[in-house]
Image 1: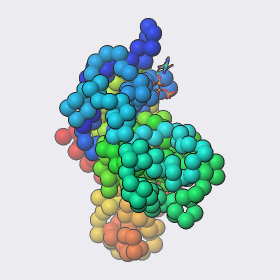
Image 2: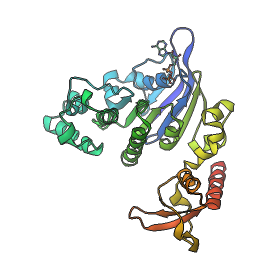
Image 3: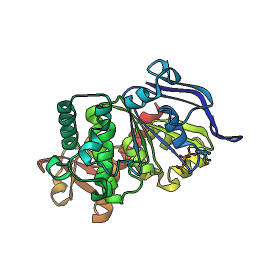
Image 4: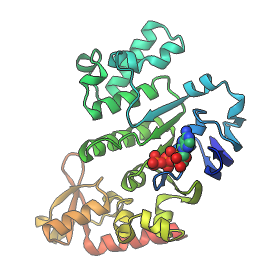
Length: 320
Ligand SMILES: Nc1ncnc2c1ncn2[C@@H]1O[C@H](COP(=O)(O)OP(=O)(O)OP(=O)(O)O)[C@@H](O)[C@H]1O
């Protein structure tokens, strides 16, 4: 559990972070969003004490972070940044094993952990273990960065624009990998991102910042449905808000039995979002899709009117 209580950071006169309060319970995925310079990275860096806060209190599992030894604290907290921060003259395997080695794990424990993480992050050891960072693509390097951050199995993962420098396809792949990892590992994650779709896709708690303050926080659905002001609304994409809302719900949760009109309808994975299903309908000029499971077997159908009704149900749920 991470708690920020009226936390501020002043670099000179003006506050970069101005009395913010935020609770991130264990296992929650929290995304910090906001325009450039609003204090997102500073907030993240105060949590692992790379930047010292100048006001308020930051509490980790019931204890103020000032009471922790900063080095010990950072070893408990994985940190992933945009340019990876990998050591250029160390191999991938050595980079991933950095923290376990600092923690004086045995050679065998380190190499077993490195192997496990390489497997988890889809970096086959035979191909990657001995490569150096300059021999990796941006997406591969970022996966090594995530593996390194997870190496000592920290409870907390801080991620600062981890996929910001990647092309859209690689970014999408790594977001999907992160979602899968999080479903398995249940880390407490704080992610800083400029990409609202990334935040909505991954986070279960959205924090919108502006000029050092938190202007709104809540579940992505609640924030999307009731933006606190015009700034939040424009950050959420203005007129695209309805589509973003549709990206929070899955086809599999809104299915009806396959009807007689379904034969010619396009097939989509049941794990698609309502937004993806809508896109298929628009692209194909049809009002119905068949959802299929991982074996390509139909599990139900979704019509355009069901899709619209589902978005309304989600809205009613969020308002309840
Ligand atoms: N070391 C520093 N010294 C002086 N000012 C700083 C320092 N680090 C950050 N700032 C200032 O604090 C404010 C918040 O910066 P921060 O990097 O936290 O914003 P951000 O929301 O992460 O921005 P971006 O999205 O562009 O990365 C900015 O005005 C920045 O110029």
